[in-house]
Image 1 (cartoon, rainbow, N blue to C red):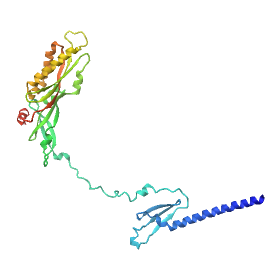
Image 2 (image 1 turned 90 degrees about the vertical axis):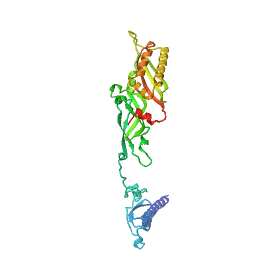
Image 3 (image 1 turned 30 degrees about the horizontal axis):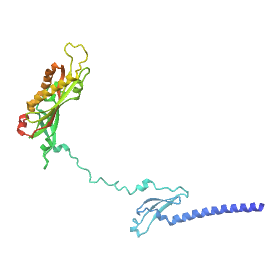
Image 4 (image 1 turned 180 degrees about the horizontal axis):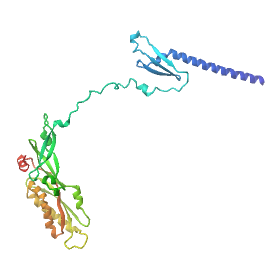
Length: 332
């Protein structure tokens, strides 16, 4: 029994020594392989640069001259390398900074095409004066900008059809009319003057909201009309009921039948006033609110009204352009 234990101990010690010898042999073999393959630290392109090679967990740092750099040296390769201490480390890929060297080709180069010359866009444009129709007291509205004529592109073609929105207070020099917005459309260009014509009307939002109140009925109507000069318009009218004389009741709501009668009268008056005149005369009626006052007068027997306005005008269809008529309405 003792002999068996002694043999077992000898076998264990001999196997431990054999393992140590094997490890030493492997380390020497690795060093020998590194010396034989030291040229493999050069990068694939053969360019000179610092390289790092990981061989069985041992890192090698070196500077090498590859095939591309050795052409003028008799095809001899020279390598400078340095081995780090023989420490077993986990193999890792080269850093991103090492991989990026030599691949970013735009670092040292300038921008393609060089700097572009900065050109002022306003140097190619001209100013034109906007002229309002003779219906309004103030004819000079302001100026507009357009690219000047170049080649087949004519400046006047870029101006025709433009729509300008102007406050009626500026056109009439009257601040009481500031709640109306007039649209003017450019019809023709004479020299540096842009001749315009009426193209619509609307109320400002704050004015429209201020008219709506409690304890009263709101009545609206719209109608399509045709003027004597073949302009097709759509007129929108708005009105509100008010208290009768000596009325004690707080509210002034109209009945549905009364609202229908008032709406019918509103349509009749708008058609009559618009179809018996041309566009210029109709626009002149919008400014002092002739149509609204006529509606209040006619509907007094049905239910008294207040704040009656033609609040919006749309031009649905305009006749063929006639320069002679435009010169009468809006001379340069």
